[in-house]
Length: 121
Image (tube, rainbow, N blue to C red):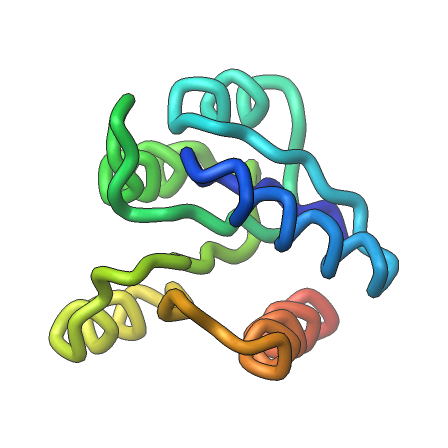
């Protein structure tokens, strides 16, 4: 799968990129929602991992903009330390997955497996 990872924290981008590449996925990192939107303008991604709180535009705005871009991204995963249970339910109702920071490698694998199942279905 082709995965876009959007997070202002370099360590998080590095970790996700390393793990996803190890599992055979193509990964494109972006430090901001603006850079992510520029990439989405010219490339289709299977999965978008996005943080919620970033200095230059937030993940909620990015999700809204991506939702308005048909066929640019098949699956969205919110990866944030600030996900409340209410937010998780709201995201789930919109078919958006969540991964709460700090997360374990097996939690990342589980979310990724759900993304892969969706791309096969």
